[in-house]
Length: 163
Image (cartoon, rainbow, N blue to C red; front, side):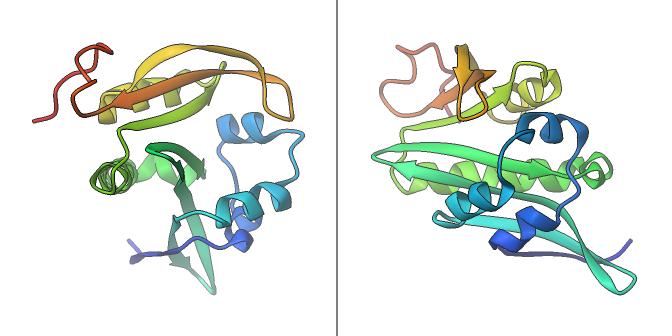
């Protein structure tokens, strides 16, 4: 297997990634250049590996942090299917960094048809589905809001205590 490197996210990465089918569905109708510029304004990373003469982008992810709430974003390629442990560990680190830096709430949106992402968020980090957001975002697609709450409010919100 080729060595994998983690680098800071750049807008060009979002434009170069070959999206997994579920991500392509979620991003349909959006201007990837605009989305990439929004993502680049916040901390993010890209995982890539050398394949022949080029770097293949495996995934990009990051968090938009605002007053104690981190909203995760991610773009995945089909290569993620062969590297689930890398994706899971990287996302866990990202969530932990947000929490260590004062975020009491970490949330993510998952397209209504993307059951795999919802399952993964619930399993990998204790996210809970909070509700369905109808006509969400510029493309007006339905998305589920999932969140993880930490700190003294966690039990009141039904979250599992951290160990």
